[in-house]
Length: 285
Length: 231
Image (cartoon, rainbow over all chains, first blue to last red; front, side, top):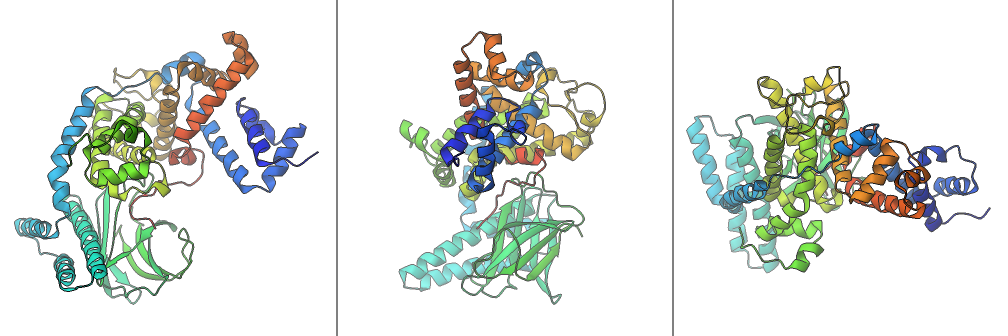
């Protein structure tokens, strides 16, 4: 029996897919093609991944359809959106436009934030003033420098930090927003994490600049299981992370949820932590 | 918002997800319209099946697309397709909706606790707009109910999008467990035709459903649709 190549392996997998029981039968089949396919799969991660994707779809199809063609036919009848929805969505988006434009302008947003805190009568967290001041500082620094590259960098940082502040604005505007304190491993205050069900914003001035190749990686964990969610960005001495929780369809912030920042060495796997935790906040506390 | 109509017909078909999201992030309404026309039907079909309530589904879809407009800059094509991203947002909002309805029992909508009760195979609770058979099956606990039900809703929507002949071979194969030869006999189609239609159907389903993380979750593997600021 000759060894099976990628092309022949894919062809055989596609043949097996024609029969809903085909993939399940592969393991026990003594047919020459199936034996050759199993041998190929044993040494080919690409084809194994391909087969796993097909198996996932195959299993989802079997789970999604009722057991008779009549019931299944009804279950997969097209469900069209109402014709008016397109106009509604466009109208809603057009109404958003001024807000989106404003979100790129740091100074008006800082004004809006001041008004909101003044109205609510609550003390204004120190980090908001600090971050707003940094926006101004970065803009000022950008104006003063005469080198184009540094100016471009300053503009990028300004825009990024302005986006972070826009996210803070959105979070604080939500009545149900929460804020937790970040602490260093020595127990010192190290910034804040603020969030709603949809956004999460981290601001800190407690992190020294990483060395070349190092990154500060952010993690969310529940009951000891952690997920890498990205890395901290820097604008001047402020490090921040802004993201949406919407894509985390299965993640719930609960009593045991921790937000953590680790310092990862150059070349570290972005999906698993290998560096020390440098900041931590208990979101469920 | 920039003027619409900046994109030509060829742009509308050629734009990949990353370029489309970048243009939306830059405020181009025309790019947003392309994304809506490309994905709204699938997202709506999935959410309507999940919630069993067309009006609630319309609100969720509107919310998901407004979120796309606000946060297109956060889309990272390395983490999945734009459809996957929109579906993840819609799923999140739809589950929020179920939770909210659960806190307001008087609302005529599906509740997660209702889905866990015994009896019948459908979760449609008193909403006549969507036939019971469109609603996915029940399971045993709210989290797995939501995950499985969402996966079923997305898969059913994927099948609904297939051309009729391709949909038919998938239904007979997966719902009635018929072999290709049996399908050919039942439909009086040549066996080669059944095979080629099945191949085309599977290829389209893979293209639409392959990246959807919930399918992996429903199969028992850990998966997520990452957003935010990945590396």
